[in-house]
Image (tube, rainbow, N blue to C red):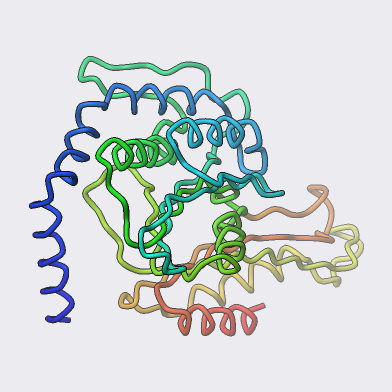
Length: 293
């Protein structure tokens, strides 16, 4: 780790002494109004998970206008293109932001700016800021004449939120592995630039359904209830211990079932979101969940 830290320190020192790099940083700062303009425009194009096409088509145009080459849109409406590196190495780095938001059609009506200059609108941050920021990076590279050693791919991905489960990112990675050796990925997300995660957090989403014969709550009282079974499974899951390091979490996030106040539930469904910085812990959670079910 000490060698890695020294290498990083040396790399940062080299960059800060490069006049073209300093020019690129100044370009980003000076063109902030342009970046905010892009952010506002893209925010107003609603894109609930699974409905990203309209925003993807506009973002594709923006990437092309900013000078990105070989820009493509795949069948899922992921958009990506590259800045070609000088080494012709067949290696690359990916800069990514996701196109979808957690909000439904009709939630986005206007962008409001408060007295402190902060912008308020559903989706203005997560993750439209990333799309605009990566456009700014692309323009800065071009304006400063900076040419990377390896290729740099810029991407807007679909289906990150909710049950999308980062599927868009997975599709892009599958497509890129046929074209390049990917050295690293950098995704912008969240409310600030003060937190940096240098790892990959895995996610597993479960949908669990219990079914039974049903019947009247009085006359068929001996029959099992799907809701009772689901509740017992959830109670078992609360006994599962997860480590704080590597950070691992899970929650039963949604539950529904039954058909009438006087009926024994024929069906009950609940959903689980599990996350960990360890694949081993995710695998262990899966086994524990199945035991509980």
